[in-house]
Image 1 (cartoon, rainbow, N blue to C red):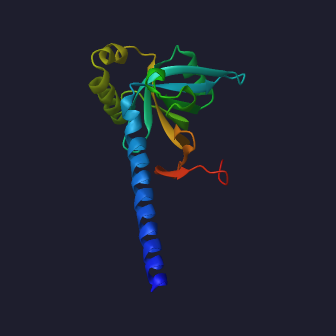
Image 2: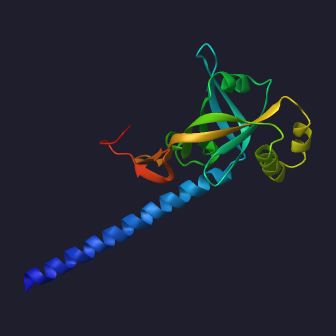
Image 3: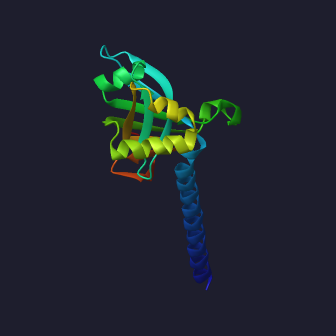
Length: 187
């Protein structure tokens, strides 16, 4: 009789752990999906023709597939760099004043491939409208400037960090799936 109770307790314990684990995964997934919505601009990293890195920022819009669109001046060094090397690092990072620990700021990074959107095409006009909706009148002025261009940044992989021991890899084949980083899969 004693064994029967012991087994029952173990099964209930495992079910509770599974439920707790699933609710934690769902919480992290929800946080990941909402995290970029808290930002109007992103930090971007590019490389010039000599291989020297450049970090800058730019306002952005994002589509449902997690493609990131930036509307940038052709006079900016990051734009020249993107034309030379279409690989762009993107970073969303929690405001320092809002983090409980400066060493564990929440952040989402993507390695992306940049593609220039041809000016005045249907897609270009749709993206400009999204910028107009999000940022207002300034976009009308930028639209009139011939050096401004739109790049689509397509994530190839990423990482979402929400604290110590809570980091997740993101594969470009499925940008909606988070894989927790452990000592066995830290790549």
